[in-house]
Amino acid sequence: MRTPRPVPSRRGLLRVAAAAPLGVLLAACGTDTSDRYASGEAGYVSGDGVSVEIPAAERGEAIAFTGTTFDEEPVDLADTRGEVLVLNVWYASCPPCRKEAPDLQAIHEEYAEKGVSFLGINVRDAAGPAQAFEERYGITYPSVPDTSAEIMYALRGQVAPNAVPSTLVLDREGRVAARISGAADPSVLRAMIDAVVAE
Image 1 (cartoon, rainbow, N blue to C red):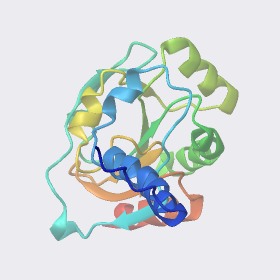
Image 2: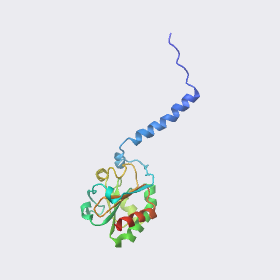
Image 3: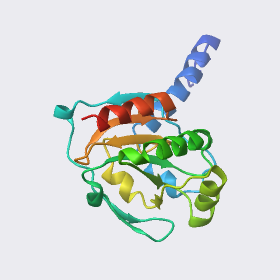
Image 4: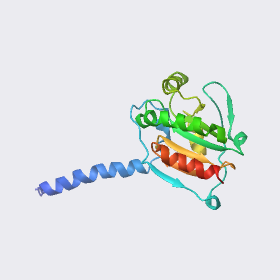
């Protein structure tokens, strides 16, 4: 005769139920989610809004990648050496990307005469949705599509593969000098750019 299984207590069931979502969350944190950029997911994973400035002596190697903008113009990051460059990771249906777009455009216009360039990296969209977004928000700086995550691979260690939007400020040597994970606060981004321009 089999010994009957003990009936779990209500407290024990609650403990298991509480642990399950944590396990799922921890599993997600340990997974490279770069493939979701090419998927049809309606959701997004936003960054946490943390900003970091990196002293010149502690910056890593220059970022390098090539691509083609939605307007069919070639892009080689090596050609931007000698100027300050702001990279913004985005896609059209991302709510924080829509929120920060007008601010990014305003900062782009404000700093253009100071030799600061902007380049978008679109991780999901085809040309149609991306260009509709740019037209809607008056974005005049170029973006390159990266649905294959090749550029994001080049940015590994600098941008979490599931943190969209993210913004990087590169110094004149092409090294990451500052980064924002999540929607950019305009005053924080301006301060970051000012610091790098002044170097």
